[in-house]
Length: 359
Image (cartoon, rainbow, N blue to C red; front, side):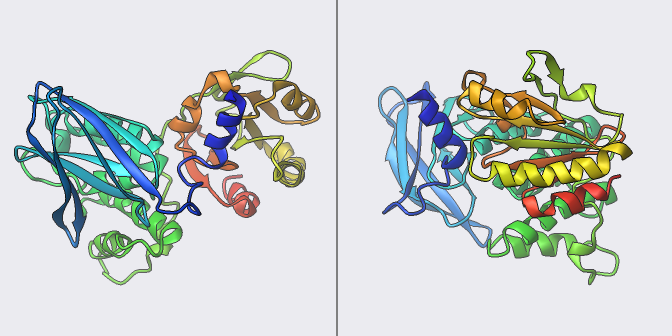
């Protein structure tokens, strides 16, 4: 059953119930120190918030809401005594929420989805003192945004403001505008029908000097200088530990998340083999992470592959999937010769073309 659950997470997860009737998402949580107070669930439309539902906290401070799955990843909020706590919903997940009455809206824990955990990180950074003027904090926020620039958390962060009401990412600032542009590009390319796409596109284009440049003309929107690689340290098919960073700085790296026992794997690895044969003499490395439930089957496949292959077993969990914000396999990332994470590739057909840009 554990193996089956593991496969379900990877290939169905929060997206797999689109064909179910009356698909719902749910948030359940506790506000410690609060009792029998009214708490509201709110959604936004055209920048205005409105109540979807309300309920009274139990004597223990617990609550639960259930709503129809949104058509696009969405930010909702909980409101208690005039204070707001924000959380993302992709589709039909169950989000868990935990805070105290004193800290409601200031500090709270989210779990239940990759995007919820990403927002946890974002909120911790956004609550940093003088976040607007802290280059280190804004850099970490930029890295977080680029893990999934088309996600709800990215949209949330570029619209966040500091304690004094100043935008954290100011569209009049050139460096900040690159991050806004990365989000705008991702929404245009991956979420053309999302109602927020027009807003982020206008936010970016409205701040360009000419005001009429094609947003897709922004070069390498996911390339932010010195963006650090998130370390992966797993064993290869021989049992040797193979950290991802052992390859950085030697040549471009294609980081591949896959499953060798999946139907797509033979054709995919055949194409990767052609790419590796062509470009490995020029320095290309491939670091491939297998998420197969059966280690023996993974080893049988991995031993015939010429590039670095490592194994993420079910007991290793979803740590690396979460850190790279991967919700569906296969997924790819490019690391340049400087060891910087520069681009995410969601379409396998685009792998060869994208990698060749960094040779």
